[in-house]
Image 1 (tube, helix red, strand yellow):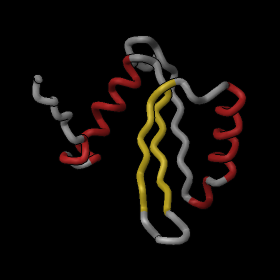
Image 2 (cartoon, rainbow, N blue to C red):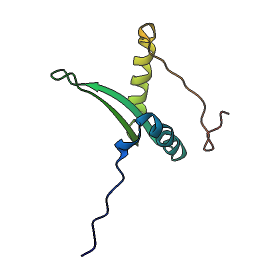
Image 3 (tube, helix red, strand yellow):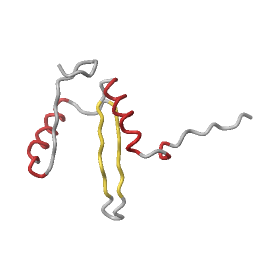
Length: 90
């Protein structure tokens, strides 16, 4: 019987080192990239979630943009750029 191959543990590298590659891949494939932080109210344990895929509909995006705009005075930031397939501003 062949030995079971072990997967590389993504947790062995700091997330900050992995994020540029994940973001680059999402941009190259025109996918959504979401980075979200969560704190468990019971334990206080903090978790960060990085996701890429096709998640955000145009309706959801308008709502998120509106929410970011309305929370600018609380530190929200919204950056929008024209996008081409090559990733260059146009």
